[in-house]
Length: 430
Image 1 (cartoon, helix red, strand yellow):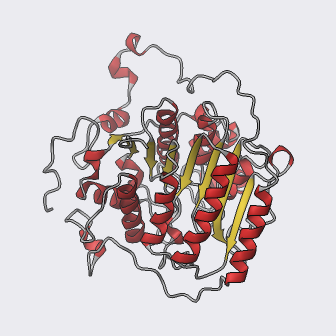
Image 2: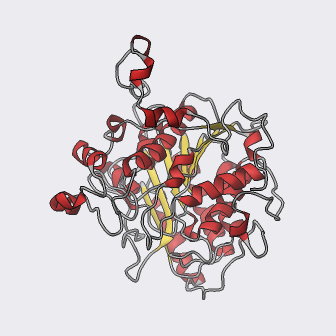
Image 3: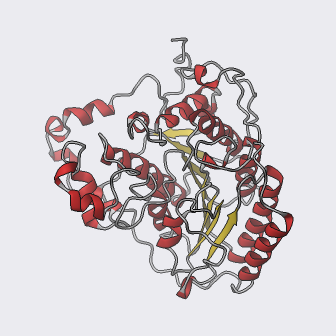
């Protein structure tokens, strides 16, 4: 057992300032709320807090097609009407609107996941958290399901530079289709997704029969669930399957997508999970003591998303949090009881014992086809992704950065970064 996990946490306040539009369920503001809860519980004192670098287009193009990345970079709300063909081609529009600072938003959340993977690769931490990441639906050449850039695929590609096998686990209510598709033909990544399946539920994929192809056959695992699953049946199934997966596959690192739309009461979800049930999955995965990259994902009842991810930050830190939420800038969102815990829901549970038993049997049967730890020939490790080639010292520092970028370098009052932990009274009543 490690004596104490070293945890790196990535956050940029700008990620919560973007706005998908008035009727859109995705509210990035939930990330500011999460961060303020983390601060109000003083969890920042137990982790290293980093502002991620903004991923370069060339880094995003390690998975996404260069033309798609270029279009995201170029398009603005004012110019989108000029590109009807491209908007259709890249699936931009209603679910994935073009909004102000869209590309910067993608750069921040993808940069956080890339930085998290690199810190793990360099053994600078045991666990890395990027709640802004986890956008698992984005495809190589198109946006999908509120996701534009698939930070998870980029993070996994980074981890594969140092690890022969990476395990991806997804507990979002929606199928982790973009990540599964990216690694469907390889045995170097095993994807395991627990999700609602059926009745035209987005994205419509994730049947237990989808198991991967070619070298990747049996390396995609899907656990399709019905409405109303509760803590006890979800966690029992989760632990049985994940324990067997880790024992069989022997991953070198794990990526855990903690979409909070699988919680009871979510605007788009249909499960009965309490925060305790959801967090129990995180606690279980942590116990394997493998390098662990943790991201957010879906979650559309924002006060519950914030509660869930703050609570799970505590779990990752082995810190018991009092149920009464301490005062913070967003305290009014947690009325009337101001409590951290989210109770389970009361939707009828359509997952019968025999249904879950069949799913479990199917999955364990498929795992038996895998030789213990597939043999992977590791090649020389490529360097961490290069940054554009220029010598900072030779440039005039004032010309180097435009004003917008310079403003971004100035530390904001409501954020802690490394070395800034001595200023503890920032959260006054406002």
